Structure formats: C-alpha cells, structure tokens
Image (tube, rainbow, N blue to C red; front, side, top):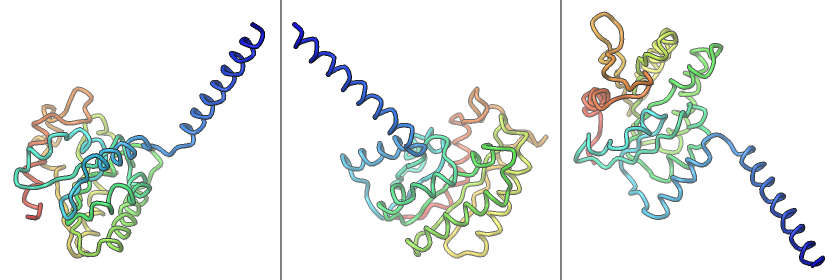
Length: 227
C-alpha cells in the first residue's frame, strides 16, 4: 500500500511538471504560433499548389473563408490569420509565403498595426510594409504584389486619419515599384456623407458581411492575374 502511494505521488509530481512545462512553452511562443502550425498541418495533408495567388494578412482575410467562390477560375490560397499585424507577417513570412512560390501575393494588413496603439506612427506602419515588400521582392523577384487598402471600419473611425495617411503613403510607394498594384476599397465602402455603409459590417463594426466582401470582389477582381 505504501509503495502504491509513493507511485501515485510520483506520477502526480511528474504530471504537474509536464503541465507547468507546457504552460511555460505556450507563454514563450510568439503570437499566432498555433495558427501557423495549423497551416503547416493543412499543407502536410493536402499540399497547396505552387505558382498560384496567395492571400496573406489579418482577420478580414481569415473570415473570407469562401474567397474562392468569389473568384471562380482562380486558384487562391488563403493564409490570413487572426488579428495579425505587418510585424506578424514579417515574423512568419518564411512559413506563409515562400513555400507556395506564388505568382501573385494579395496583402490586407496594417489596420491592426494602427489600432495596436495610439502612439504608432504612420511612418512605422509604412516602413513595416516596405520591409515586407523588400523581403518578398528579394526572394520572389517576379511575383506580383497587390496591396488592398485598409478599410474604414466603424469601430475604428477615430483612427481613420492615420489609416488614410498610411494608405496614401503605401500607394505612393507602390507607384515607384514594378509588378505591383494598389486596390482602393476604402472609398467604395463610404456613403455619400463620408461615413461607412453600416450594412457592409457585422455587429462588431469591424469585420464584414457578404455585402462588404462583394465590394472587395468588385475592386480586387480586375487586378488578379490569370494563371
């Protein structure tokens, strides 16, 4: 009986150590680590084809789960994740971009950078994008890069001056580069009075309804390249 008690105690101690170690590892992992592992697992089960169109960015792409239905005739790989920022795309670019060898990359990101802090400067957001662009261009010199402008989210309306300024700066930068494009989805989502159409957004006033994605389809579609 005494020996059994000792065995049980040792087992419980080992279990506590394992749980503590697991929690410690989880706390030291970078943001969105699990999302990236899910992509890798998906690719191991059903490898994505190379030379196609890759969507990367934040939750506006994550929520667009039926994006392929909006663009029939195109093969689209969607690797949008969580509330990611441009810093997160930089961190995980080796995992979510280069394995697919895409012919075109469509980026929607930057909104969460602006929203992360009132102290984040427009120049900081733009420089993050420029760094991502430079990294991609170095690794994939022939790949076309398309940036979708930050949208006018009602819940973030007080940040719109910075978002508009970042949109404009990124647009001007892309005009100086080859094999690029800039999609303005900001203006088409505004009513004549300059405020966002409420029916384009879910109840959180941040993510979009199918009507919102229909606007994106209309504006993004002409920029997609045939494969």
